[in-house]
Every structure is written in structure tokens, then in C-alpha cells.
Amino acid sequence: MYIQRDIEKTILKAVKQFPAITITGPRQSGKSTMLKKIFEKTHKYVTFDDPLVRERAISDPKLFFNSLGGKVILDEIQYVPQIVSYIKIAIDENRSYKGRFIITGSQQFHLIKNLGDSLAGRIAIFELMPFCYNEMRRIKYLSKKLSSTENIFIHSCLNTSYPQPNTEVAININQWISSYFQTYLERDIKSIYDIGNLRDFQRFMQLLAARCSQILNLSTLASDLGITVNTVKRWISVLESSRIIYLLNPYYNNLGKRITKAPKVYFLDCGLVCYLTGISNKDVLLKGPLAGALFENFCVQETVKQLLNRQIRQGLYYIRTHNNLEVDLIIEKDMEIYPCEIKMRMTPRMEDALNIIRLRETFNKLNIGTGRIISLNDETFVMKKNIFAVAFVEYIDWLGKKWGHT
Image 1 (cartoon, rainbow, N blue to C red):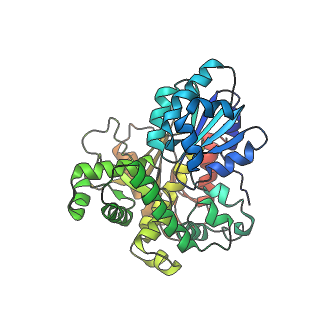
Image 2: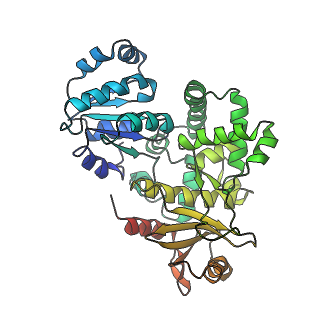
Image 3: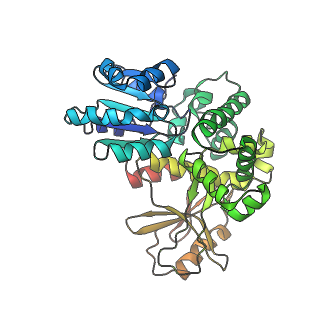
């Protein structure tokens, strides 16, 4: 079963404008499936996951490129970074040949660095994340199940947002995510990054998952694991570059020293948080100590996906001051900010809007737009002037309208 991805139209436009495009993103986010579907009639598919193909490309790159012919999809290029220079040569020989190379890779940091340096001006770079809510609701058997915010949240946490466990009904989700995690550790972390002890790294991910939606405290993590702060910084960078986590930076532009300046940490898939913290059923999810943090993580993860699907990489923040004023999510567009509070309850209360009200009073020189309270409630209504309680689905639709559809 193939589910149309939101980013497809943007990619189809880009292949008409650039000699090469690159699709990065987490492992199993659906890069190869999408590209084989939308370019099946125009491009030959070659994967460097195949060790024989990899060896041919490394041992004789010139011969390998001569054998490719016309337009080609080069999948998992991070395994053969040596051929990037040959791609550059091929492009420079005919800059007018648009859409010739479509390149994918799971490890964003190394891939982007190599391609960005070597193919500047010749390549368009995109990121494909696991399913966002818009894509999830295109799955027929899920359309009724995802009829309420609570059900959307539960499904995202207990089934992940990755394509395979959502499109293959008979799959064992616990086995799938366990296999996914071990593959990530063994094939990506161990083979590409010089991590050292994988057990320490796994323990680090578990501690980080238990602290999702919290301000990142490097010293505490280092102390709990018995490692250095620099090691924690490097491991955070690894998780961020491979799109396992997302760091939400504080909004402190011209706001002075009163603002907390450390980022908050979120996972880009709630299902991975649940796996790492041992949450495997609805009751523990909704009533356990991580319930509120997971719902906040879910709302932020979906916001990030909406923007990344539109190739927007900036504009999301939070605010926390030293006198306990905190707004969970700040969305900035065209010099205007939209404050959002995230509360895991069915009935939003007026007290949920207090921090948005305080934000307006404390920073009255900011251009502050309509505030939103996102909760498990499925109705939208006015709480106070310029502050709405919004249904999750309407919040997602607002993001789409605000930034335009792809």
C-alpha cells in the first residue's frame, strides 16, 4: 500500500529546475519507496545498500557511472561518499540536464556536508520525515480510528509514525520498533559514527527519552551516565543530525537576560520514546508520569513535520523566563509570533491561557498574534480575546494555510 507524501509536489518541481536533488531523513521514513513510486518511469534505481553495487562503485567509479546511462536514483549514498566528486563532474559536463541524479541517504549530517560542499548551486536538498498526521489519515483503515485527538495521539505513540508499521496491518509493532532501534545502533551509529560503547549510548537515549519535552541539561545527563559533557554534546549532535531528536530553541531575540537560553529536547517520533521508556499500552500512556510530556512531544513533532514538509527550517521556539513565565511553543512568521500552550486534558481552562496573557503584558513590544491552547479537546472556541482553544486537526490545518500547501 502506497500513501502519497505531502512533499511529492515540491520534489517534482525541483527535478525540473536542478541537475540533482537529495532526499535525506531518518531510516525507514519512506525515501526509497516514495522515489521508486514517483520516478518509476523516468529513473533507473540503484541502491548502495547492496554490497556488490557498493564495491563496483568504489573500485571503479568511472566505469560505474558509464554504466548508469540516463536518469538515476542513487539510494543510500552515505555508504560511498567517494563518488560525490564523480557526480559533480557528470553534472558540470551538462548543467542543462535537469533531474539527472536523485540521491538519498539516511545520515543527514555527513551527506549534507559532502554534497553541500561539492555540489553547491547544482543540487536541491529535501528532508522526508515519517508520516505526519495529514499522511496518516490517508490510510483507509485508519481514517475512522484517527477521528479524535486522543486516538491520534495514542496511535502515534503506540504504533509510531513510520510508514511500514502503519501500512502493513499484520506487522508486530513491538518486534518492528525493536528491530528498527537495533538497526539504527548497529548500522548507523556503530558503522558511521565513532560512538564507542553502544550500551552507554543506548542508556543515554533512554535517559533522554524520559526527559522529552524538558530543557536540555547537559551536565545532569553527563553525571547520570558517568561521561563528559563534551561526549553528551557529541551524542546530541548525532541524534539531531540523524533526525531522531529535535532541539527547540528559546525565543530570546532582544528580550534580555531574563530568558532561559538552553533548548528543549523532543523526539521526532513518540513511538520511539514509548519504546525507550517501556510504555506499551494505552493506560500507562494516558495515566503514567510521562503522559503530559508525551502529548507535548507529539504536538511539537507534528508541527516540525508540517514545516519540514514545506522546506521551512526556522520559526519554532519556546519561551521561559526566570520568573516562571513559560509558553510551550512560539511560531514565528513575518515578524509576528503565535504563542501556543499544550495541555493534555479534555477541557481547556482559562488558567491554561494565563502564560499567553502574561507574555503579552511582559513583552508588549513584541508583535504577538492569536494565541492557541492545544489539548485533547476536539472543538475550537474562543477562550479570551485573541486566544483560542483549538482542536488538533484545526491546528494542523491552520499551519498548512499559514505556510501554504506544497
